[in-house]
Image (tube, rainbow, N blue to C red):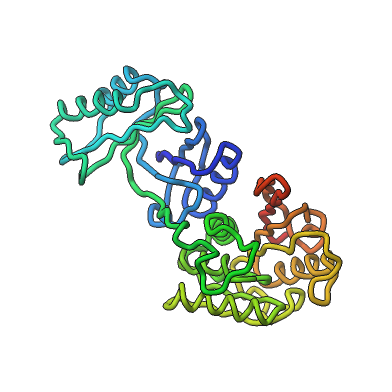
Length: 329
């Protein structure tokens, strides 16, 4: 069994669990605020997760007190040796436990069992996770790479307002293509500045982008050439309702539909554009994630998709993102 430390806010937990389950883990179950367990984990995929911080091998679960954590560790059996450090967390500040006291007490148990303490470069890290009335003890196994801030849309060679946050773009790629990663092809039929394609490339997928505007297609190519110089990707100018791709050319489609109530985008009405893109997406891939400023459930089902999951995520007070996780019906 494994323990997952979830990123984001409380409202992101279901979203985070599904991302982990689609891209890296099996049988994920929330056990406390910010914490989940999983039966199995592809540890090599953990660094690419957006909404999971750490994955650790579970020692056991008890109530949220230092005394109970010490009793659990004392009774536990594990086959490890070398140096160790204990890292305590009060997850989302939801318990009254002193993490420094927990680290000292648990460290004492490990010293008594023959471990040397090395806080700088230990062979093993024991994570003591206190959340509400629950404590999980677990040996750290893998962590996600939290470098999203280095890829701010405003720092790219080509920038346009409204570009998606890299952390969210990564999560949408994992939701759509997770089971096929890293050997996946991901299509974005409305690629804009290329943010979704960038995250697809960084998790090992081949990105294929399309945009109706020459400016956006050129800009996406510029960004990908600068930030993914060695990756396999392509961007073309074209109509999202008539993609220049053969049937089943990809493993997943991910796209961020135009926002607002504007009557036309390029030569299409907004509803015609999204409906047409959904119909093309179901032709070229068996899975998709659609992000939009309103629900498109009926249109997705009419195009041949099944809505497996849906999320409504607050961006700011005047914008909620509706996220549909789709599979070909």
